[in-house]
Image (cartoon, rainbow, N blue to C red; front, side, top):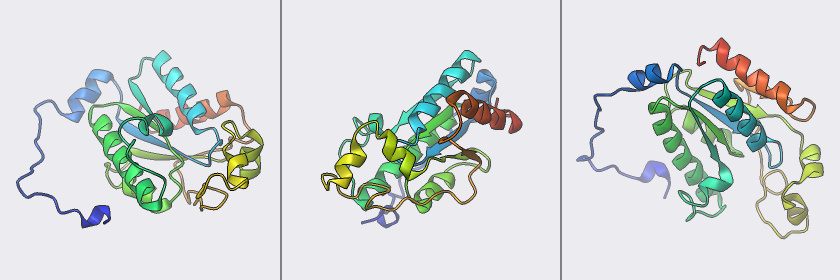
Length: 204
């Protein structure tokens, strides 16, 4: 069964609260946004997102960082790594990011999210301009050299099946809002690139 097969109960109605997204955003002096960091394992998604969150906090902005491993410890602990489970993982994270954006936060989401259709699904949950796809553009060769968790070595040895980039496809973004050359630039440069885009869009 897919997400589209689920029939919603007609008695469940979205409740409009008196305190709106606009009110919460004004209180925080920022515009809500979801920065969706996508890339191969080891590309630097969590590292860059974490460094960006630190900088935003120093500047006085309100954020939350959603990380793949952390989410699977709780919200998605019941999911495996089949195609269906991965899709459901991204759907849940997308819905969570949407609620956090509704709270007026700048949400940083660091997930491989290998398929374009899944990333598009999350984009369509949010108003125009609120979803920024951030491609952490690091080559497979570079990611394998880094291999911070030893996962590529295990995948090459056949110990991990359906590993993205090895025996499972990764679909690079076609036209991301932010394209980070993470294989050649420093973290500081990449963070400044993200901040520049946020300023240009008047999110901060």
